[in-house]
Image 1 (spheres, each protein chain N blue to C red):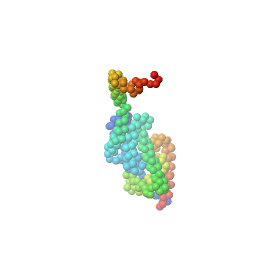
Image 2 (tube, rainbow over the protein chains, first blue to last red; image 1 turned 120 degrees about the horizontal axis):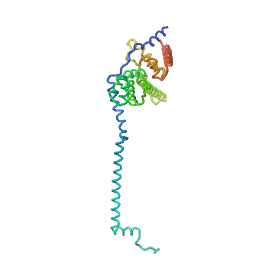
Image 3 (tube, chains in turn purple, yellow; image 1 turned 180 degrees about the horizontal axis):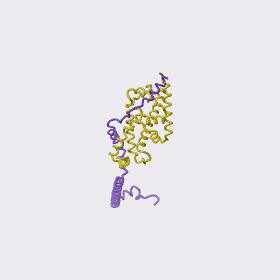
Image 4 (cartoon, chains in turn yellow, purple; image 1 turned 60 degrees about the horizontal axis):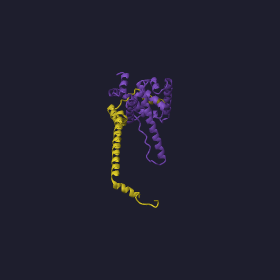
Length: 105
Length: 187
């Protein structure tokens, strides 16, 4: 009997309960946390922005064209130098023994 | 601001709309989380996570239920997830202590005192909430939503995707289990 009385008292202990309110400055703390968590997460998406992608591709394209032009210029100059210089032709012939007589001749 | 205006503002990412939403729901979310978690700091943390989730997934809210139902559902899910993860950690801690990897005693949390309980009921309410902590998840959730957040059976049914008779039966079983446990306590 005593048990039942105690049990019912405990079971009724939440009657008349007042709801708990959120702590003070809840919104301030929440917006602080959101700035920390959400803003950095947004940054990588800038990389997928069409304007950023177009600009990046244009820069890569210009660098490629510039490199290609430079490379072509340099190769043409080297070939010209080599063909105009008789010493380099002799050196080449000497290196490959083109001017020595062999047993096959 | 009507619920439609609030939703449209949220979908457009307007800060005043988000602030209005937080002010409107912060007490409901915090009180529910506090009832389920029985820990002040964790309840605040989960409440913040609930609003962050709402902000991130407002596009997914199709309006098939009330906004409040959707927010309560997120609160319950997040709180139960945290409780499950705490339970797993506690179980793992117990196993490692048995294996001798950790000699620290397993820390039992202190009795939780809900700030809204009447002074003369504090001790009894702490007893009751400790027993509620041992109930199965669905019974505990229904009990907390009904007793702490004072929601109707219809509202609870909407939050738990259930029917009113099912909620009635869930609450009856919860009360039976609590009475049984309380009767087993030493005098």
